[in-house]
Image (cartoon, rainbow, N blue to C red):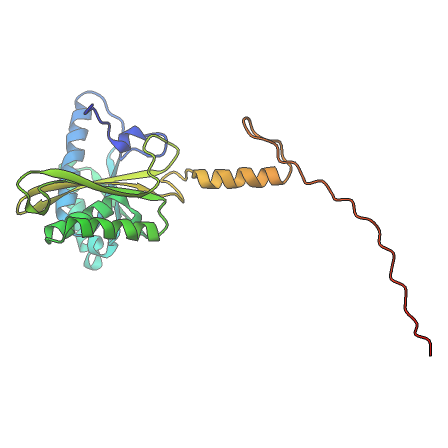
Length: 261
């Protein structure tokens, strides 16, 4: 009880990928780790309203590549790329003068991105919108755009209550122990006048995961099509037999009726 693993770390090398890609030993590892933390804190603070979903940091010799996954690339780039130059210079100072390259990856559907959904619910809570209305609206929007399931959990002094509590809504299928299903996870904190309210989102993308993991629906459909074509059944499956042709008796052609004149 109480020993919960991070949903992203639980799925590493299965359906999720690392968000820091580099190798180091000794003191270099410690310096790189603290540098990554400083870079992420700086970018999250600077791009607070730019719908920033994920930050991927890659290091290779004397170069650092930062990939920003955002739903508003225009706010990140700025006019004539001025914001990119400012951020590159600041990150280079954090990395000890290394060459920095920033890439922008646009998120086409932010409504089915777990981190952006959590951020959207948190922003509504900060605007004093009812937490039930904010959660139900986000759940319905995600399901309408093709998600197979979603679960949202908020915890804190909901509605300004004196005693903190947690409430959640779920719709569709969100199997957290099935690693082959692409579950996306997001967390954000809403800073309200009553205190901090945490928002957690588990979202079952269904159609495709980060590494192109096929969902169970597609596997069942392909398996059914293969059985219909007469292929060998898999272990634990029953063979589908073709229906027997029904015996049809030949019917003699009807004779022409000639009326007597």
